[in-house]
Length: 257
Image 1 (tube, one colour):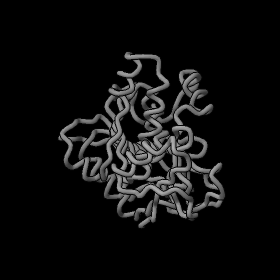
Image 2 (cartoon, rainbow, N blue to C red):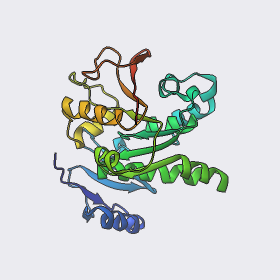
Image 3 (cartoon, rainbow, N blue to C red):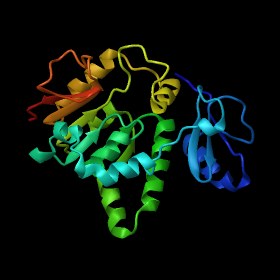
């Protein structure tokens, strides 16, 4: 899927940021909204006006500082997280590779739970949004100790996840995969991040998902795949299934040489 994307600079105060982003990714900087998908800075926050976006107020951005995430952080240890159990927190798993970063929400949750997360994102658009969100999260932290905890515990990599997995020398205890795209047709009421990604990313084939899972099983002793509750996520039967109210985590225990 090829997208004619530009960076719209609505105010002169965002010119420097816009130019730096253009230099990094090659997207042109323009002064007016043409109606096509575009990136723009709004008071220092990078946002995307996507195909289903009716006006700039509906633009999407990645916000690790949202009210929802602040509440999540405050109540995290009061509410047991199924993902923590699926990933093997109590079994000593610490180093996690998230092969499908997307909105970064799962990687952020894993970091809050105490995992050290490396999140991979192939799309330059999504990666730029992620990096902007992570920078704002870092700026909100109190000082050097918190900065170090974030820098060492939540890392972003812009690369095809399969390529990264076949070339990295880093050892991971577990690998996390959220294919995002269900095999079933999407509802028009899908959450905004899903709608955004559907509009800017190609939908992967089921074979791509299966190949990713097979490759991951050769690289870590524990592979966890997230998906809808009543949908088979792979041709291979999982070692164990952790079921929530609407989602499930299929865990594959693997012996890695």
